[in-house]
Amino acid sequence: MSKILFDIGHPADVHFFKNLIWELEKKGHETLITARRKESTFQLLEYYNFDYTDLGVNKKGLFKKAIGLAQTDYKLLNISRKFKPDILTGFASPYITHVAKLIRKKSILFNDTEHATLNNRLSIPYSDYFVTPSSFMGDYGEKHLRFDGYKELAYLHPNWYKEEKDVLKELDIKKNEEFFIVRLVSWQASHDVGYKGASKEDALELIKALEKRGRVLLSSEYYDKEFEDYYIKVHPAKIHTLMNHSTMYIGEGATMATEAAVLGKPSLFISPLSGKLGYLEELEKKYGLLFSFLTINDSLNTIREVLDSNSKKEWAKKKNKMLDEKTDATSFMIKLFEEKLI
Image (tube, rainbow, N blue to C red; front, side, top):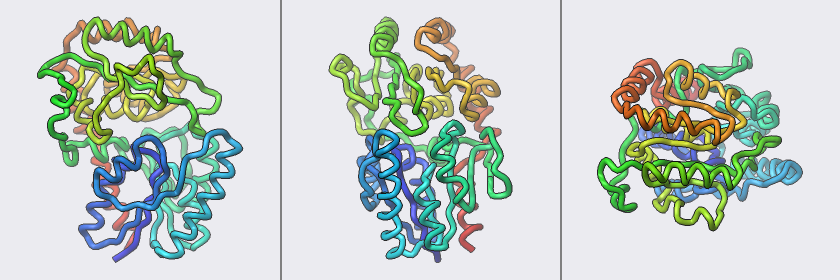
């Protein structure tokens, strides 16, 4: 049996790796999780009863991020020397690629973000296996492995997805009630340098427009008292169940836009990054599960059109076509890891 170190840097990483970790542990492999404090990452790890080692806070600003990179490499190196992993893995984690080289072990690096230029330069050249969705724009040679799916299908594919209980009841949402999920991001990630999102005024305009049709629930990477009445007040582990019963997703978060799309919900991605991510391009142009816009104002007519069309059956049909053609990402990863661990 083998030892695998999982490095978690974002709440979505918890979902991406959780089923793989459980399945590898069932097969007798030993795992260790390291994690950094970003949004709800620790809450999710604790919700799923994962033990983890705290690697500290994700730094903001390029200079602080550079210092943080060296500090995190050092912490992870010490942890790895004690744990002695056979493989280190993470999603867009430069740390696991650096440390794997230093201790002469293999790294499996997952990624789906083409425009993360700095992070990619710091991680991909040092990885042993670089794994992306087939829609990833770019080629990194023999070590670049592709799977025909999306990272979100590691946990939202019907083979793995399970609903949390009483989520709607917690928020006093009635059966068949229309409600919308809106997502705002902070634009502080290293791959977001040079980009900016919607203004508070535009976000409020969107919320007011949606309120004419139903309730608005807001997920945001930052706090603003003017949004207080809209913030989602359930455990972050329950967001996918909430999304699965929602009317529509509108927001700046690419991961949540994809989650809504693979669940068969109308998904509107509003971002200056529109057109720069291969998996979102595919969901929009091949499957029609997503719309992308540069600004909130650009999206308003489409929101009205989708709501007026009342086409739940059409969206279910689109989702089923996508699921028929795409890979269950967790099953792909289980096979990949077992091949690389032998």
